[in-house]
Image (cartoon, rainbow, N blue to C red; front, side, top):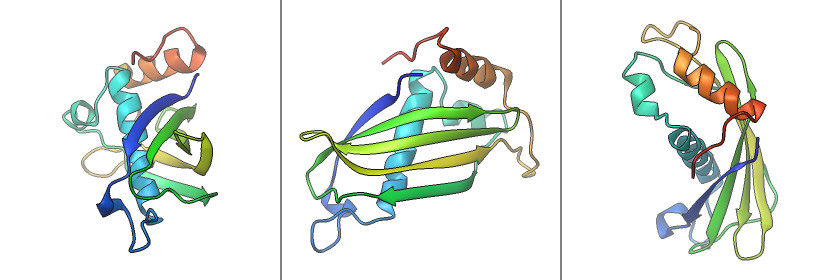
Length: 142
């Protein structure tokens, strides 16, 4: 699968007093990347949650390489690196668009759960679209 790319302009609210992006906001960038990847697959978190299925984070990691700063245009590259019956893993790389400098990389793992927080299989439509993209038999529409 080719990484899905999402651009984001760093706002003042994302930054600390030194105009550096606050570390926890990289997890927000990860969420933006995975949300847009799903949207371009023809899926939305809203549509999935309307079926009573949720994707809480069960594991996360971020390695900080360099600092993004206020007003930087960054690119979040998002890949789906594994998909199982009841879980999915996304890998992320965040770059400064102007220089292609790597700023951070990490991943999140999500479980599929129902409203009682019980682990369940991914909805069929989600599984089919994700597997097709991972196998290269389908493209993510930009």
